[in-house]
Length: 321
Ligand code: UT7
Image (tube, rainbow, N blue to C red; front, side, top):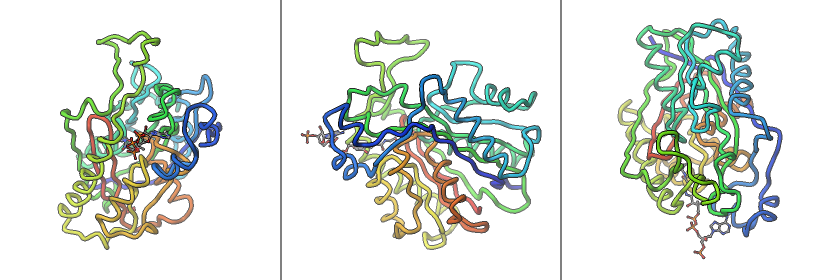
């Protein structure tokens, strides 16, 4: 038994924040942001628009493409770092929004790797016969935890949600997934507050995403190079058998580095960072949905998905679409 992607979906908030807009907010330039990151604009949730709102729209989009009803879903898993509430978890909140009741529903926090972790977990439930049809979502409103006066982070991130319907199939599907984490890097990219430790005084200026960008960059490039190799080796495949690389969209230079490692031309890499920015757990499923809806990713093709984020966490999924 395998799991296969039956439908994809995405939702981006209406409000667009361009590099030019950011020039008015912090000491930066459109040129610096484009050259160093590849980002031109990002979408930002409006006041009162929450991660759950984005999740619901992306999920309904994927449900529609899969040609199923919400009631056909027997597992919901949402990867996010920016949930609406501490609990109930985002899977449960989304289940209620979709008007279905009783199926297992969970949230998973693995920063930018959240969707790959969620996909891998759902795949295992389906492979072992414990679920037949899973709704897997990656969604964020990172704009809520960014210091908008800090140019080293605020130019990078955006909001959005991406979703897939994963269903049981006799043919692959998800061929393999590979998950990793290393907590020794916990101080390079993190959010400093939490329920148990307590929230900092907002005025202290620490209650925001903290990142040592330069150091994260170096580890990301080498780690993503390794994970794509690990994925190919595990399946005895070479890079030229991959039709599309669908990477986490953190920095165009990191994406190009991974493509170079695979000797893949950029024509076979899905890039959305210019329009989406870094949307953390939402980035890979949104890039997948863009590629599917534009007709670039076709049924039967082989896709390599990968992500890297705070923790560090990182992972990949090899998929026959
Ligand atoms: O998604 C999870 C994983 N996250 C990532 O993978 C992010 C990884 N890191 C990166 O993408 C890059 O490190 C950044 C885009 C964050 C930064 O690019 P960089 O080429 O590593 O720049 P840098 O941090 O080395 O800074 C270079 C210069 C500095 O000035 P000095 O010290 O050389 O005078 C910064 O102060 O650029 C300056 N700078 C900026 N200038 C204009 C930093 N941010 C900005 C800015 N606008 N927004």
